[in-house]
Length: 187
Image: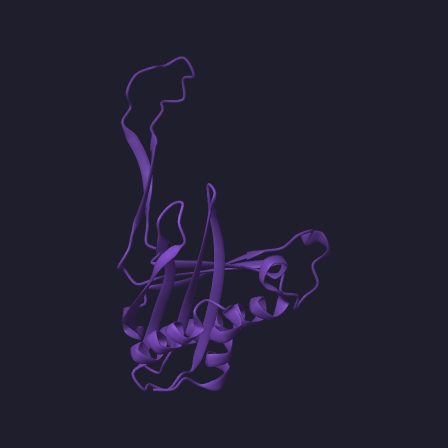
């Protein structure tokens, strides 16, 4: 199975085991026509360990395909394995597409500018996050147990794209993909 040239190039440019990631994505797409895509490579630092991972989002006429591959290995040793997981979500199952825009110096913002960062959050009900904090009564001297309060957030995937870290082109790609996904899920 082959991928559209621009999707293949995006995976190659990310540089994270591109032959493997291309095969995984092609298998998940299963021959569907690709309407849009977003490839996001990220490096994280965990103490002295550097871990790389890539997320590929693909929009087809009927599905959102999510592919994620990341490093696994010994804490002090080289990467021993890479795990790739794909999920296929029917567009009718996507509950929300949220964009968070970050703009530096908003007083000088020009219409049509991209800003310097966007976070694309997509929810379809597979994963929920619970953030709990101890509840308080407002009295700073009170040491009674008031239980907990919190929020339940459905955000199955969240990708942060920054023009500083990823470049203006990636920021533009993220916006184009998010707009296409918003339009497709609004039908």
